[in-house]
Image 1 (tube, rainbow over the protein chains, first blue to last red):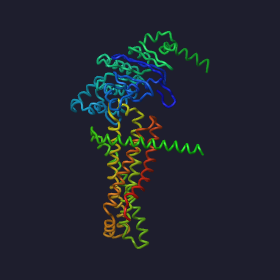
Image 2 (cartoon, one colour; image 1 turned 60 degrees about the vertical axis):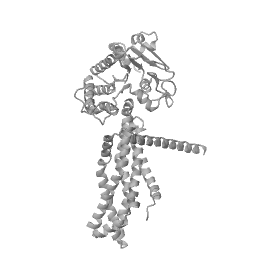
Image 3 (cartoon, rainbow over the protein chains, first blue to last red; image 1 turned 90 degrees about the horizontal axis):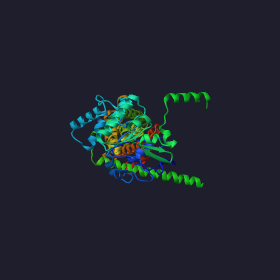
Image 4 (cartoon, one colour; image 1 turned 30 degrees about the vertical axis):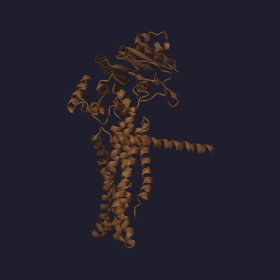
Length: 248
Length: 260
């Protein structure tokens, strides 16, 4: 997969277990978000296959892709809620487009969905009036409203305070446990990865490795284990001061 | 010389490819407009945004243009003792040319740029990808209502521009310059032909509306997902649409065969 001359993925091979939480880790520019967009069929690879429940999304027409996507939800980094619609209308949109029930049914389903992410009194607000954490939860509610089998989450923890972060973590874990949804989470957050992940896919330059987070953290391969080694904050701080004294 | 020819060829191919993409985009808009689901509410919202909200600027501009035409026309015609033809001069100028062209330029500046900027910022903030991931075609729910509404509102706005223009010229010619009201109105009504002038004018407005709607939505939809991309989409919409309207105006005028 390449954008102009910049190759993002070459010979990438990985799989994600059904019903489990997989976290995709990697350095900046390693193609984590691109991998999610490839799986969702938002971009097409230059070569290769991407199988989602047996369907190769790289070969599907737009119409068939829409069918496959009806089994996939996606939580975007910045929510991607339509900013001209209220939170209520954003959640109601996929239900209305599919004609799933009367307006009364849709309203009750939207309210139930908002309540499930702890948002009871925001339905009349526009996305721009929500805080970062609330926006992320509203976007999660929209991504889950059609009960997808697979949920793709692009950096769900970035820019959140610790309380909001824990809340999103708990919601994702709850979704996986309650509905058996397969979660693919792109993250930079190592602590969250340890708390959430059943499996980690680590994208490294020219290769990828996967396994349980504990196993990868203990790997003899320094490039792999080093990714999980954040060190203690105090040691890190001492190291920074040391580096500042020595100078560039 | 070879480099120059190669460069010209390369750029021409690029333009052709872009026109091809635009044609496919227009077909997608047509398909989304004609086939279900019909999103009437979205169309009405867009007609309000693009049409009703442009009404004030179009009416004020029409009035001002009509007043200037009335003043210049009267001062010129009176030299030849033909001040009684002011109604015909103003009416034909506004209906045949100034009405459709100036309305299109005004709507491009106000609504076309806003349409391109809105769609481009939806690209930047992944809102269109969000729709795709919900299996909702962004062309159907975002693009088609905006492009189609532009086609619908342009003739209406053009008619308002012409009406206010004639009112402005009437005010200057009759009220300020003392021309006889009956002379002005009879010269106006006797010179205008329905098929040649009114239908031709509305046809121009429809074509300009289609061009403006297509270019604005296409530039927004295909913009780069960056702040610079939004800015480029907005600027290019205004420039390309305006030039396209002016060029197209010549061909429609020539092909429609406006009688002199």
